[in-house]
Length: 190
Image (cartoon, rainbow, N blue to C red):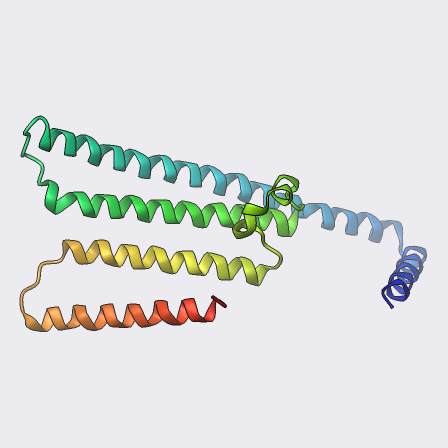
């Protein structure tokens, strides 16, 4: 059955080649090669991802240096207990955005240019394996939702509560976020 379909496709291509003009052939070739412009987005996304990984790591190293100063050098000018968690959560946020850019660059490369041969040889690269634009969108959307969750957590750490009603709003928002994550995870086929 598959062999018959291949023969039919080959016949259609032969008929199309016979009926095509030089201008059509050249235009279609240029149109097909224009997909390589995607490489600009791939390179830019990879560079942006690396920058965010570096910035996040430097932020974590800064917290480590401040922790060293707080406990070893007894420099209490930095409120370690109030700020360290927020800064580390901020670094995690940067890491997650870097992962989004990394998945995006791998995905659009595989969709528009070529399959990555080195990734095929490693079975551990399933998260970066993209077969369709919808699959790429789903993976990116899930990581973006996690970025928003982490950002929300960071904002909650910095909040000042002025009454019971604000604490109730916080509890309801956490419940809503938990339900959304539950349904996201359940809908992901896990």
